[in-house]
Image (cartoon, rainbow, N blue to C red):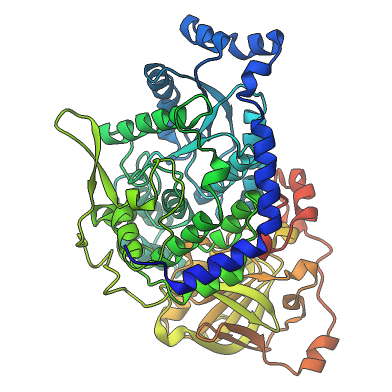
Length: 605
């Protein structure tokens, strides 16, 4: 382990200074919430009787006595999400292990869990980003009964883990462990799936052929295996100390997965105020763990959604993370992993090559992570350079990870990175501020200068493509896709179309106030542009034919129009958003009207 890298130290110190007042206020709040012990013992007899009325005899007796930990389970289980289907059997397993550990466990509540894979390109996607804040609220509702001494958080996918963590931090005096369920087995290769998608976009494959390919990729219980936001979530929870070491990518419904879940229960009990090693969530998530999360995103080419989510999660702990922090760290953190869409491999291959333990070990070796952090494992981050195994007796143990990657095409040592810097960049210019993921963008596409073609939703892009209007160099400006306009949906319907045009040799790029998640692929995409068009941002002034320059090398995005002329232009408005309206959208009007800007997390919390 090396001494801390000077840039990591500098960025952390700036973050700590910026967060001094907000972090102190947060720590004071959770200290006051802890009060003089577990809250359950202060409930009235009627309150407590309601709380254990449905329990079995032994659990009821333990809860009456109030001397052993009670663990609240907050679950995102539903059996439509493949990633969350394995959670169906977790509550009974958790209750059993809790009893063995001298504790009790109850399902405190469930949170909504929508699948972005199902809602992509549909009106339901307009609810997706704001579901993060709804999940946080639902988590708080689940924990509000003062019945629990610790929490176990069962969630995987895009908005679910960020929402659960924001909710857990609102009750940051409670210890907690995040419990993953693991990825599904590998299906057809991501390259094969992408080829069918592009063929379908060009009219060269049938719907049945496309469905067959998709069903061969998404085919079993477990997390989707590409490295989008769901798997970026798992990486974050491990590198930020909220998972047990090596827990993120162990397959569902296996003895090792069950052993890790059982150990998570035991750790939650031990960390509770009634256990031996009290350690609340609010003391794990701090400036250092947040910086470790940013570094993990850079080193793995993680999802751009975390330019929103990690900012919001940090703020829930009183930590004022900014896009400038991502940008400063990007210059010194090397890319050590190539996982689809940034490479050919999936997360199973990443895990088999050494996975999180190898990644953490390599980053620690050059002082690119804070080792001196709190974790649910009860160690510093050096305890995460280990691989979980079952010993000869079937008991959980950890082994030091190998110093050699098991597959250099997927995961590399820090001495031979895929690239010297991280995959996320901050953009700034006369069109506003945005971000770009460059880890899979070809070197000759890092700078694009081309005329704008302006669209007001992603379906308009598809229509223009089908009419043959896009066979040229251009920058697709897709505006009115921010949180105030329509909830900031992901724009994945654009990916196959734009990839086809790029493969034809056209120099193209995307510029939008919307999102593209972790699957933006090879097309240069300036996303999350703020201020958004709906809030009077400069995108609302762009016209067809304006020359746009997107320079990912220098971090700029500009319209090359006379400054006085551009400033004098009226902003386009869309008073009628009827083309966005879908079932349920009206329920989120309060969110849209109160959402903060993308660089502050694009939510209401």
